[in-house]
Image (cartoon, rainbow, N blue to C red):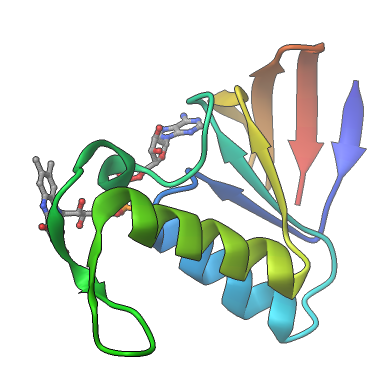
Length: 109
Ligand SMILES: Cc1cc2nc3c(=O)[nH]c(=O)nc-3n(C[C@H](O)[C@H](O)[C@H](O)COP(=O)(O)OP(=O)(O)OC[C@H]3O[C@@H](n4cnc5c(N)ncnc54)[C@H](O)[C@@H]3O)c2cc1C
C-alpha cells in the first residue's frame, strides 16, 4: 500500500513524541509516528522509578508516567501514533518502507 503523510516520525520515544506534538500543534498537517513496539513511550516505559522530570505540581514522574504524558501530548496535539509498525528502510529521499500488522506499506512524507 502506498500512502502519503505530511510528517513521518520514526520512533515514539520522548524525542519522536515531542517532535510530533510540536509539529502537529503548529499545523504541519497529518503527523504520523511509527513505533515498532506494542506501546508508545520509548525507553522510559521500561524504567519504573522516578527520574523523568516532574508533573505540573512538581511531583517526580517515573518512566511509565513520563511515557504516558508524552503519548497524551502527541495525541492531544492531533498526531497519529501507530504501534507495532517498523520502518525497515528507505525507498527514496522522502519515502520509507514500513511493515505493519496489516501488511507492507510505502509511506512518503
Ligand atoms: C537504563 C536507562 C535508564 C535511563 N534513566 C533515565 C532517567 O532516569 N531519566 C532520564 O531523563 N533519562 C533516562 N534515560 C535516558 C532516556 O531514556 C533517553 O534519553 C530517552 O529515552 C531518549 O529518547 P528517544 O526518543 O531519543 O529514544 P528512545 O526512548 O530509545 O525511543 C526510540 C523509539 O524508537 C523506536 N524505534 C527505533 N527504531 C524504529 C524503527 N525502525 N521503526 C519503528 N520504531 C523504531 C523504539 O522502539 C523506541 O520506542 C535512561 C536510559 C536508559 C537506557
